[in-house]
Structure formats: structure tokens, C-alpha cells
Image (cartoon, rainbow, N blue to C red):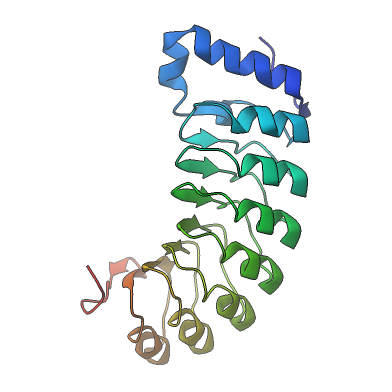
Length: 215
């Protein structure tokens, strides 16, 4: 079977799922799922088909763009892990649709920029949110993530200004992970010391997990 490099449509999605269903070996390989493909986009109808599959985790990391309607349909996926790490940017409308997903993990680590408008929509996702492609965020974006109540992974952040650290310290979630920091000032460290959840950090290669954070 040859995989097209453009848009995944509903009929081809049905054929792909049939391949997984018919061959036990492919069920084992479903761990890497659709990440093996090279579709840049997906039609709304195909998103509905894929959302009904039994592949879990579901990797759709080849997708480069996603409509708000396709995102809304993918959010109906009933598995625990949805990965869309090929998306480098999304609109607030797409972010709001993806935040409706109710699995355990939503991975958007391909995003390289996070606006406050997108962040505020993503903060509605209730579980583990992975945003490892973000290397720097503004105070406004950090503040927009505060209402997020799940685990938040920002392991791509390289620097953490004191005002950003102060905003992140108010994060309402269970844990905050910052494992790529190259430098953190005493002021930023003091601000994060007030974080109420579990704080996991690596600064310049050294683990500095807050011993006073929740287990």
C-alpha cells in the first residue's frame, strides 16, 4: 500500500484501519500507529473515522495542519493518548476543540510558539498536556496556563524569567515539569518554591526537583 503525502480522506482511512484489523502483526505495530504515515492533513470525515479506531496510543504526528472541525472530531477519540506533534501552530479555535478531548494525555510538542489566546483554550484540557516544543513563553501565556488542572510538561523551556516563573507558580494543576532549563535566577527559583503541586526541574543538567513539592 502506498501512502499519499497530502490529505487523508475517509475512504483511505477506512482502508488503513482494515489493514490493522486484519493482521495481528499490525496490531502490535499499532503502538506507532499513524506516525508511520506522511499525511500533511486530514479531512473532517477522515477525522471521524480515525477517532473511532481502537489504536491507543494514537500518533498523528505527520499532520501539519488541522481544521477546527477535524480537531473537534478527533477529540472524540476514546483512547488515552492522542499525539499531534507535527502541528507547529494552531488557532484558538483548533485549541478549543482539542481541549474537549477526554483522554489521559494530549501531546502537542510540535508547537513552537504559544500565544495567550491558544494557551487559554488549551488550559481547559483536564489531564496531562505536553508542550515540549515551546522554548520561551511570555508572562501573558504563562498566566493563561494557570487554570489548567492537569499535569503540565514544558520540558522545552530553556530560560525562565522571574515574572514568568511567578506566573507558572500559580498553575492549578497536579505537576509542572521544566527539564531543559539552562539557567534560573534566584528570583525565579524563589517564585517556583511557592508552587503547590509537584515540581520537576533540570537546570543545566542537574535535577533540582523541589523537595517540598507534593509526591
